[in-house]
Length: 249
Image 1 (tube, helix red, strand yellow):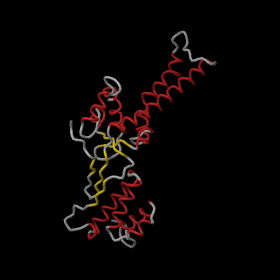
Image 2: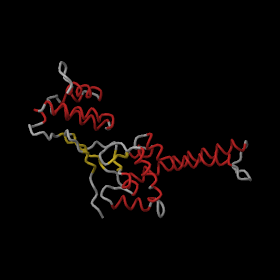
Image 3: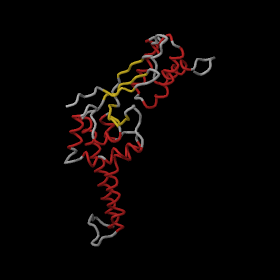
Image 4: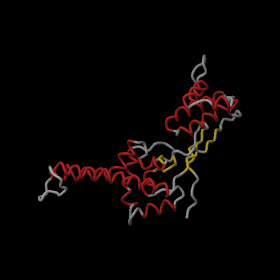
């Protein structure tokens, strides 16, 4: 059995390194079960309502003859809801689904970004392989045995499932040769600019923790930072990156 990786290390040339904890078989199974119930209910709801409207009475029976209109208006949409549920929602919700949100996990690429339409399509096509022989037997086995807790679809698409709500392990460092972070004005502006660029993609707890660490290393008092909300922290970061009276870094 491969050693399980503690997390996905997202490296940065400017110095902000974030470790995203990898989700295992338990979180995956919980998210899948929630999503399975949701898509089953949605698919059945369409089928039942469509059949009632089609028949014009309290009956779910299909027509005695093969009618294309029955298949196109009742059966096909229900099947589409069931089988396209994951792909459509993962694209619309940027690597998440209702089940993943309840399990507090999300999909990312191997560099920590949001997967695109292509990788998500590949990942979902491979569900046919991962579901073999029954009940996602192959997929769950691979999640347990592989170092990054991935199934076939993740291997093919280059995606990982990470915990979204857990505050990541944060390391604020600099790779510039001039010295510590606190003495590098140019390096500090670069660090802050990257954090501001990543701000929408980070969880609130994570970006607040990053902002407080970075501001504290540049002389901000802990008591002052504790009273700031996210908007206040971001404003302080913007002041640090673009000092008043000076040119933008």
